[in-house]
Image 1 (cartoon, protein in one colour):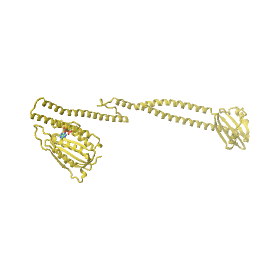
Image 2: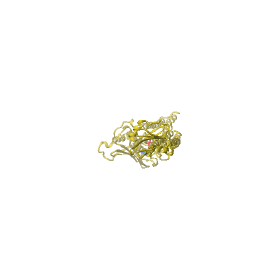
Image 3: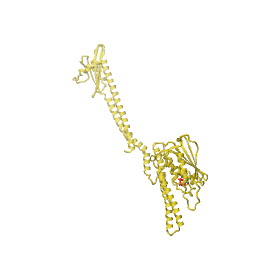
Image 4: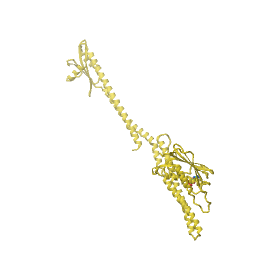
Length: 467
Ligand code: ADP
C-alpha cells in the first residue's frame, strides 16, 4: 500500500474512533440525565398528589378524582394509583380495574419509603407518604415521550454527523497525505531518471528544512561522490591504458625498424638499450598499478605490527642510494644519491618512534617519497627529519628540487597526475596516490608544501597506535 493511502487511512480511522467515542459518550450521558430528570419529576408528582389528598387526617380521593378530570393529568400516558397502608386501592385513574400492583412492590415501598424503576413502556415511581396520622402509597407511571423523542433526535444527528465527518475526514486525510508525500513522489521521479550515463551534474530538489529535503541533500552529496568516483575510474582506465600503450608501441616500432634490415652491433645495442628502458618503464608501471590496487584494499587484509620508523627510514635511505636510475645512452653520468636523516628530538623511550603499521606498505611509502625527492632535484639529495609527539610520529622528506606549481599541489595525489614542470623526468604519476592510500590505511596524514624552483616538502604523520 502506498504511503499516502496509509497516512490517509490511519488518520481517518483514528479520527473516526475518536468521533465515535465522543458521540457514544454524549448519547449515554444525555440518556442518563433524561432518566434522572424524569424520575425526579415523577417522584415530585407522586408526593404532590399525596400532599393534596391528605387533609385533616383524611384521604380526599374525591378531590383527586375531580382534579384528574380537569388539568391535573399533564404527563403522557400517566397512571396514578393510590393505596392505603393496608394495600387497599383508594384511587386509580385507569379504567381497567383489573390492574393490581404486586404486593412485593408495595411492601418494598412501605419499607423503604420510595421506589423508582424504568420499564419499556415508561418509568414508575412509588412513594410512601405520611402526614399526621395518615399514610398513603402513591404510584405514578408515565412515558417520557418528549425525552425519548429528543434522545432519538440526538441519535440521528450524531449518526448523520459521523457519516459526514467520515466523508470529510477521508477527503481531507487523502488531500493532506498527498501533499505530504508529494516531495517524496517528486524525489522518486527524479531519482528514476538518473543512471550511470547521466550522473554528471545531476541533482534532485533539496529545498526546505524537513526530512525529505535532508534526504534530497544527502542524495545529492552521494550523487556527487558517485559521479567523481565514476570520473576517476574512467580517467584511471584511460590513463592506465595510455601509459601501457606508449612504451609498448615504442618497443614494437623500434623492433620493427631494427628488423627491417641488417644492423651493426652498435645499432642493435642502442635499440636493445632503448627497448630495455621501455620495458623497465612498463615493469615500474605494472608494479605501481599492483601496489595501487593493494593499497586500496581493506585494512583488515593487512597484518599490522609495531614498526620502528627511524630504523625503517635508515634501511630505505640505504636501499634508495643503491637504486640508481638506469643509464640512458649518451646521457651524463648521474650524481651519487644522498639521503640525510636528522632527528629533531632525542627519543626517551623506544615507543616514541614506534607506530603500528604494515612494514611492507610503509616501505613502499617512504621509498616513493625518497625516490621523488631524489629524481626531482638536481643535487640528488633527500633531507629527512624525524620528529614525534605523544600521539604521532612525523617524518618530513624535503628536497631542493624543481618544486610543484601552487595550483597543482592538490592534484599530485590523483592517479596518473604529473605536474606540468615534471615531464622531463621519468615517471607515471602513480607513486603519490599509492602513498596517500597507504597513509590513509594507517589513519595518518600526508601533506605537501612546495616552492617552484626551490624545493618540496612531504610530511607524513602516523599515529603511534593504529585505531
Ligand atoms: P611520478 O613521480 O612517477 O610522476 P608520483 O605520483 O610520485 O609520480 O608524483 C606525481 C607528480 O608529483 C610528479 O609527476 C611530479 O610532478 C610531482 N612530484 C612528486 N614529488 C615531487 C618532488 N619531490 N618534487 C617535485 N615534484 C614532485
